[in-house]
Image (cartoon, rainbow, N blue to C red; front, side, top):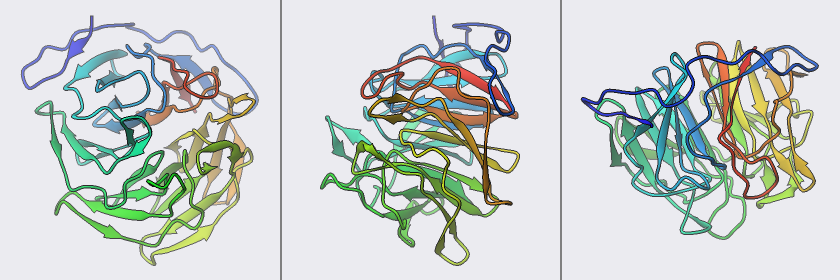
Length: 313
């Protein structure tokens, strides 16, 4: 049974009422717990937090399903299906809304879709199209706008596109391109800068990158920062206490359990306790000081899972 969210819906519990005891320990700080598993098994998902809940949309094995995790009660709800089925899209929470941007549809065709979901009405609406269609991209919110970064274009190659969406005007603006074009990358905001980390070259996880580049919107300039200790792609990132934590990834020989944290204040990295389950194509979000690492494939390629592992840093 799954809860249905809506303007007048009564939400119901579908799985798990309490967290299990901590179960994973390793070198570095932090401890892991397990949360209620996602109702569907997926990978290459788009994940974002909005008003204390975590939204999972798109991905392999998902169709158009929108699944919503409520950390306060450890239960999953279901929202209105997304207008289109996509995978390798980006998701951002901003101003109480969820935005689903780009990705692949109809196989491996990069798209320019932008849809906005309003939890208050359980409804989606189409917004101004992404100027440069792309899949395996990343996106973050900063100062009320959404920065959409790099990915794979319609020629099958990486593009450096950096385009910024303003929800207030439903319009786009071009900003300084990403210095190292890549895909399956992650991004996060600390302070007033965007950190774009890791990824791969032209869709090949045999060509993983350790690149870490910072963008300053005040100057519209990029700066190289300390590289990630472990080159990887198919990753997820979340921010805790001023650090960017990067989880998982894949390569030709397997998946990564690394949880590595970057501190912009010192331009240094450190390791956290590793993921209990190594995987790629996952999502991560910080709600209430815990980082929820959701979904992802446990083997390279098109595998999927319903995992929900929770880091208490």
